Length: 88
Image 1 (cartoon, rainbow, N blue to C red):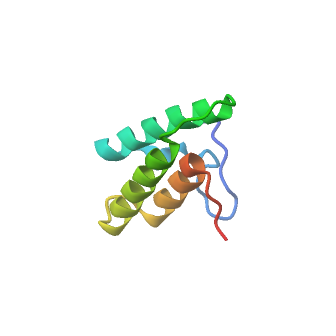
Image 2 (image 1 turned 90 degrees about the vertical axis):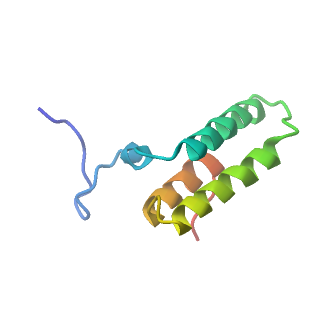
Image 3 (image 1 turned 30 degrees about the vertical axis):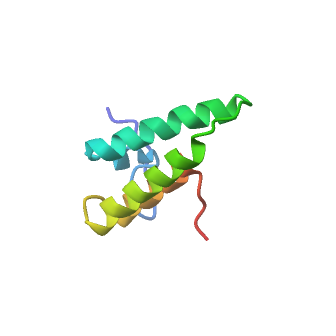
């Protein structure tokens, strides 16, 4: 029995982790670097490379979206989750 919860309006799963399936290896590597950097920042320490990782991941997301490797929906999911951006 499937216990997944779905959005009544769109029919899509509420758990959006499916948007991370099939990401290119370079994008996955950038995500991993950003996660490590956020862990340092969130622990109260300073990571002198945070801005580099943030910019690299942002560029990789944008590139993958423009090249249509990922969808705009995936791109925004990744921006919100890993870059901690908010849509206006």
